[in-house]
Image (cartoon, rainbow, N blue to C red; front, side):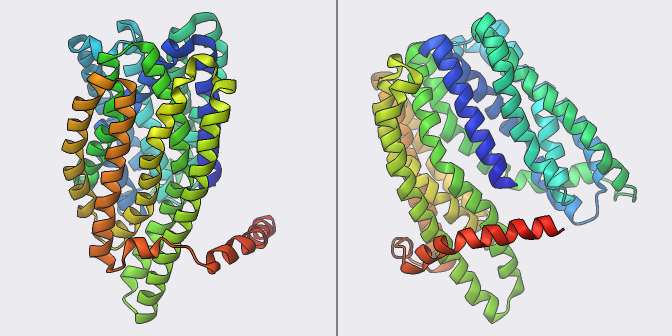
Length: 436
């Protein structure tokens, strides 16, 4: 279910990017990329890590799912409204950083925040309650709704229509998610312990700083580039980013599975579990290396041969920008597995240490390279930043597990055997689903 959701988000997101690029050209693509970036950044910055606190306390049984939904929605409205005002204030204070969007369009984008937080929080309640469909469907539904509304509104109304589609997609999915969440309210009929919102925030804030700093590493380049370059350059860079970040789809999915497995094996403490944990960690890293190597080759060919036919000749510069980003994106794909292992081993502070080191270096790179080299500087700076994050993750991985990263990355014949066995395993899993 998780893989299907990620693939749907990737496919519909790519289709929306292509639609906007074809209809509006590089300038419109740059403005739309800036709009989606604003929603993403504001969502992470205003979530305060609450989603992790929700998952922890609901799954532990101390917070009834229905009551968690109601409390999280009140928090989404409060923090979402405050974040929307701050985002709109930033547009008024620093108009050059939002050059691809008008004041009215920025107001529309900021208005999506309370809705985005609403379905985001509710999905984590569903996850903690083992209602996985409520966790995986909202992001896929939002991306699909954006594509459908984008077709309907971008053609007649241009960039403003695309922005309206973005906000409306979050609002519609939030409404649908809350209607679905009524069944969680019925299931959550036991009394919750008092002060759960405060406890959940306290739990989530511990990892919040690392997530917030990562957002700066991944998305600040858009705002710096918007301030110093044309909207067309921003649009060409946005296409390069959209194509190359497909690399992270499978490594992140593998990391989602790896983290709870490593955590469970670490909690066991038995000698057999410790031995099996090392096996799982090494095999996951080797599979990630194979996935990243294959993805790098495929994306390099896609950049060279497909960008211009799909997006149009105005995006020819996106090819070089994507190739510059590709090595760093590949290294960051490896970091997903390293980080999942580190956190699963009970060392979440190492993620914070990584971002505390990488973020100031990244900001210096952005400030030094983007004003002089514009989109090329943004691609180079982001690639170097991702490479630094990999080096730091590899260091903390060795410190946590004692295993050498580079040696562990080398695939063996057993990984190829795993792929040969994958088809029968999928058929066996599907048969089990039908039987249930």
